[in-house]
View 1 (cartoon, rainbow, N blue to C red):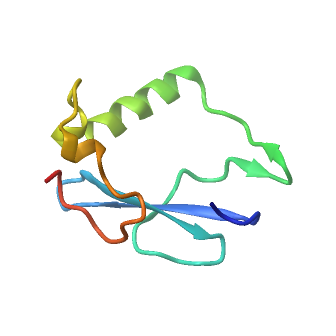
View 2 (view 1 turned 180 degrees about the horizontal axis):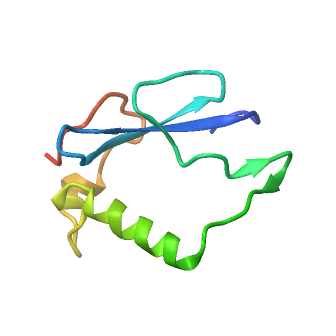
Length: 94
């Protein structure tokens, strides 16, 4: 749970470009990683959305960047039973 305020998500990747983690911060905070996904709301209104083709291409790129254990049709228990409160980088799936 978070209090109402502006937020920013930061995504971290390993040296091979695979997703390690996403972290939520207040808008004024700077965390390691790249800010995601850019501005989606301004003054309480949703910003212009990309086209369906742009969304599809982005989704494909992001799925490919997931660790292999998270791309499986039936994920392993270690990939689904993570403690969402855990903080810190995760390397692959244990």
